[in-house]
Image (cartoon, rainbow, N blue to C red; front, side):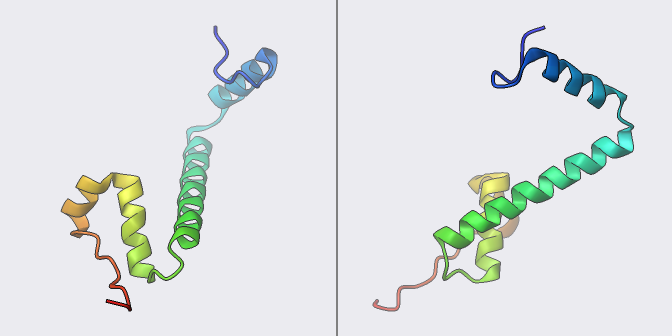
Length: 88
C-alpha cells in the first residue's frame, strides 16, 4: 500500500489506519462532526480577518459561499449583498 501522507512514517500511518478501522462507528461520526466544526470555525476566523466590518449575517452568507460554492449559495440564500461604501 502506498503512503497517503508523505510526511508520516509508513508504520505510523499503518497504525493510524488500523486504529480507525477498529474504532466504533459512533466515535468516527463524532470525530467527523468535530472536524467539521473546526473547519467552520477556521473559515469564520478567516472571514472575520478579511472582512472586519461585516455583520454576522454577511459573514454567514460568505461562509455559505465557501462551503456550498457561490452558485448554490446564491440559489439557497440569494445574492451576496455587499456593504455600500460610506464615501459613495
